[in-house]
Amino acid sequence: MKQSPLFSGFIYCLLGVLFTYFAIQQVSMSGWGFFSYLLVILATIDLGAGFRLIIFHFKLKNARPKK
Image (cartoon, rainbow, N blue to C red; front, side, top):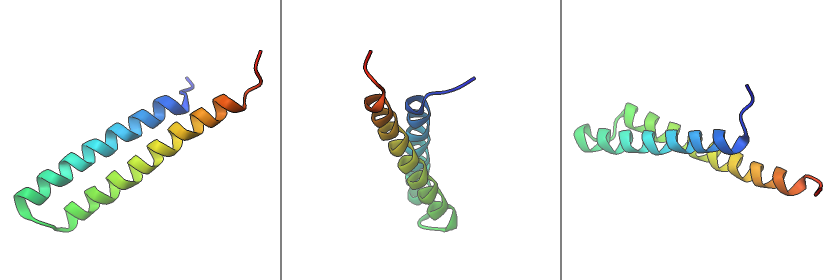
């Protein structure tokens, strides 16, 4: 089963938002610790990959020959 870059990009962005929410909760409960930094790093990686895949989808879509 093959997924489009757009779908994968939205999943990565959703995970990035979820990790951001968990990081905010962790910081508000116990301050900036190792786990908080880890969640922020994961959120950054996921959001970056998600936006990159979404942009790649539109570039790929524009590069296809028109019928």
